[in-house]
Image (cartoon, rainbow, N blue to C red; front, top):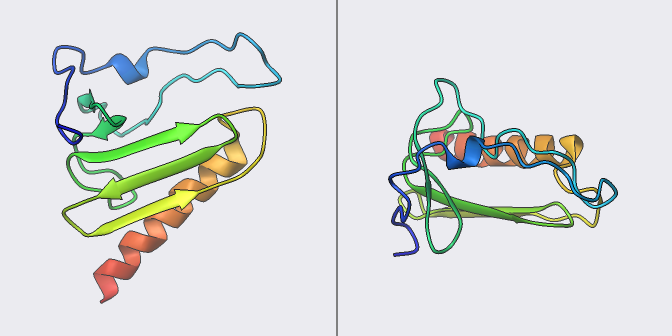
Length: 115
């Protein structure tokens, strides 16, 4: 059930802006995982589900989540890969750390394509 969408009736829930309550702890988040064409998104008991392939190479039904100190992870059971970007940077949703997360994830998938 960790990889199953528990909120199929809310396919755009992650696109609901999250306004910061304490700016020194978190930035405002407009979209948790922007994707071209705004495909449906999902939520499982373990975190956010990317239901459609992403620009990084991530495929269907990949699980990810994040922590306050800009900690981001993802798990792709089909491809047999997972990754973690960890920092101790505030506020949350730091653009530079987000960029590193996506760059790292893309490098992992690009490496899989070459092997």
